[in-house]
Length: 115
Length: 116
Image 1: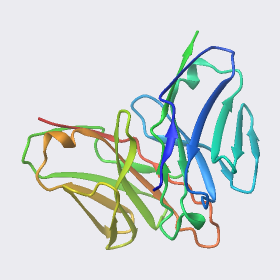
Image 2 (image 1 turned 180 degrees about the vertical axis):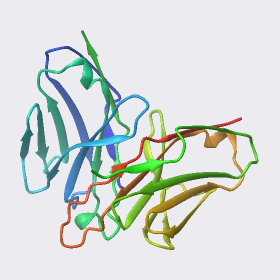
Image 3 (image 1 turned 60 degrees about the vertical axis):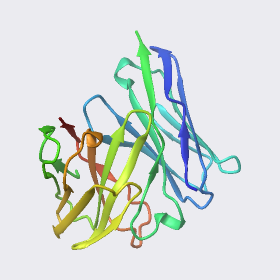
């Protein structure tokens, strides 16, 4: 079945790089997403990658996609205390997620940034 | 900017009550979704709707129903609230894929519901 897995917790020091990993199961997923959730808030779309890409960079964020291993990672350079949040990986199963654009979310990784 | 508004940030209700959670989006999105979020379980889809009066069950529909009478509004209904429905509820909306396939979901701030 469809499943998206993430580690639950990551702790880094301010200024270091953070790498959050995710594995997914649906090889037909066309888009893969990273969302950020700050305390008490909803989910905010951070970035996404199309399945025919290996890498996407957006300022401090780098997304790497290994389609063969169904592995996705989010690297945050120069991590700041304001980056402390829960990060969710999500896949859009099936070609283009189907007409309803459903997403399958991982369990979320809590990133704690130590000053 | 897309705005998805959930009517309450915090709600406390009693076991057995009928509970309504409301969600409104202002971007004329076709698709709307209701999730619940629990620690260690991530987001689980309860119901979604791809058009007015259309709905489909998600992964955990038991104990819930939904209503979509107008395109901008999607309501989640707990028919008879139980303590195991205490959770954070998140609403989202998106455009239908159409000719542009990447249509990410946009989320509201969530409603933290406690059933006593």
